[in-house]
Amino acid sequence: MDKLVINGGRPLRGEVEISGAKNSVLPLLASAILAPGSSSFTNVPTLRDVVTMGLLLGNLGARVERQGDGMSVDTSEISGFEAPYSLVRTMRAAVLVLGPLLARMGRARVSLPGGCAIGARPVNLHLKGLEKMGAHIELNEGYIEASAEGLRGAHIQLDIPTVTGTENLMMAAVLADGETIIDNAAREPEVTDLADALTGMGARIQGAGSSRVVVHGVSGLSPVSHRAIPDRIETGTFMVAAAITGGDLLLRGARADHVEAVADKLQESGAEVTVEPDGLRIRANRRPRAVDITTMPYPGFPTDMQAQLMALLCTAEGTSVITENIFENRYMHVAELDRLGADVRVDGAVAQVRGLPHLNGAPVMATDLRASASLVLAGLVARGTTTIRRIYHLDRGYDRIERKLVAVGADIVREKDE
Ligand code: EPZ
Image 1 (cartoon, rainbow, N blue to C red):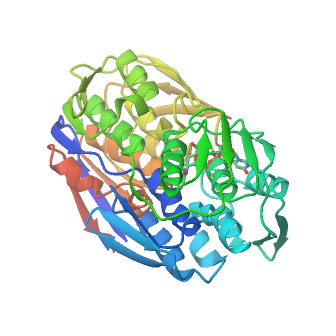
Image 2: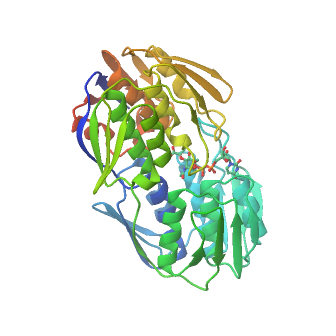
Image 3: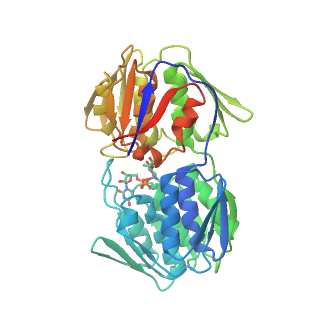
């Protein structure tokens, strides 16, 4: 296992290249199942989760090839229909093959993802929607066993605007017989990116990005070439890196329209965010002011940025109140931030963050992907040395983050952890 060793206190200055969006590339790769032939995707980040999805598609009989920042998936010979527990337990997004397999093969056997550090994360809404489209679903020995003699269009009302639920149902609907309406659909940019790729395959989709998505099923799809959108959570993470170190970063390739809620909060805290021709610039030259954060489905403040903003607010002037509405256990980073001298008190979904003039470096432990990012950010500003263990969590969602940070002045090294 690796660890990161950070010596804090250095303002970050320079340019960062934003990589492709993890939460866009994962459904995009799964969507290749729908179109026999070779689809190619570019702006694909180098992440563990992307490798895992590639392995899963290979297990199903697809031919997967990495070429530079791209990845091609040839599903001419798809023969399997099983996503094994051994893969799904390492990456819950593997559940995204369920809809495409049902649509293409008429059957699927996908391990239930099980819980994860941040919550129970059931997939009941995925299953309920697929059943409305005519799928027969049973749960046996921890597996979802689904079959369908051809899916048919349905009117699906989602209780919660689930992101991968919306994506699974949209992928099931594109080859279904008739019209599918998904109400209370997730509006995340990654849903829109997937809809764009499916449309490129010949699908007929309206309303992606709004809370009502309408899909008219077609008889067949053909492979697509598609470039994934930039990662808005990596963008937000580096915006906080500039703000927390009092630096000045140009985030090349960032989409300002995908990070408005985060930009608003950083500006409220005193940072300066400007849209440049080729990206987003973020500057801060003072201690941040306290701001209140409430996580919501897109376009509200993203839950995937909550831990990172908490790190910033630990050093703010004043007390901030954070409310986490999406996941029931997404404060695992608090105990670790407290080890760095932060003053955070959690009561249910609400965390009260009393800002302090500085944090002090210490050994800490990563617990989940975005919590790890939060600890890196705190380490960049803490006095002295911060050591972060179990950073395999970080590698799931960030493309060589320490190299990008070193390039803009951070004192951070990756070492083997005996
Ligand atoms: C996606 O997860 C993202 N992952 C998550 O990013 C992100 O945190 C989350 O959306 C919310 O924005 C990918 O896109 C691969 P949800 P997803 O279904 O789709 C409940 C990261 O850090 N729910 O929108 O699994 C669920 O428990 C990851 O990159 C049900 O109850 O999230 C949660 O409380 C972490 N039943 C809420 O809805 C269901 O059937 C939102 O979950 C589905 C979801």
